[in-house]
Image (cartoon, rainbow, N blue to C red; front, side):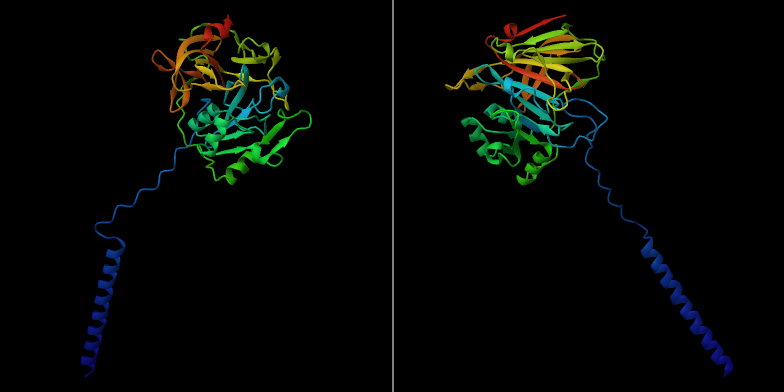
Length: 349
């Protein structure tokens, strides 16, 4: 009887051991299947911009902020201006008659204060749209207001925010005293649900100073005039040590009002295009799409080139394609084709 009980116990233990081994094998098969599924690839992060798209500079990135374009007053009563030093590109265009105005593009640097901010023209709005920039102005021509009301660009305007987002300085009289801080520009972007991120693709090509041996003739001194008025004549002088151009306007050095820091520019691009006076106030219609003749000044030299609009952005073009700019900031003069570059631009070695 005892032998039978011992045998039965042994059989029970053997059965339990067999079930345990089978369960262990099943568990191992579940943990390490014969044909494991291929794991999903990790998400690839978006490209980080390590080169500033409008200056070609590297080192202070990433450059992921959306461009801001602000209309800045260039009347003699508005000088010196605030915030031009930080601009990647400054476009100088006629606002009325021969009075010019600046459209400053900020992307790699943003100033604390910007101004005096002045009223928009339709071609300013069109450029802001082309560069996918958040547009800042104080006032507008009828044509510009129509574009802004249509929602073609994200924007903020001092006509609606005078005394709130835009502040008046006490040392100047209107309309030469409206300013906005970059902090308030960021607030305006939030208020208008505008994207704060860079999304366009800049079409420019850059080279480091001294790396291009195919530069043109010497041009260390440059003068660009609008209608012969000395108050709106810009003079650039190349400094071989810094490899940059200093700028004067009406014979006075262009510098920041708050810091006294002088403007220093790597490239001066002059393009000519059709202008037409459209009203009794001297406002202009400017062709920014057809392309035409241009001069590019860089590293103390001059190149006779052309320009074209690429997705609305103004691009210098050489014999073999897009003309390289020297890394750094650029000033773009847009002048009437009559009298044209030959009359409006003078330069010497």
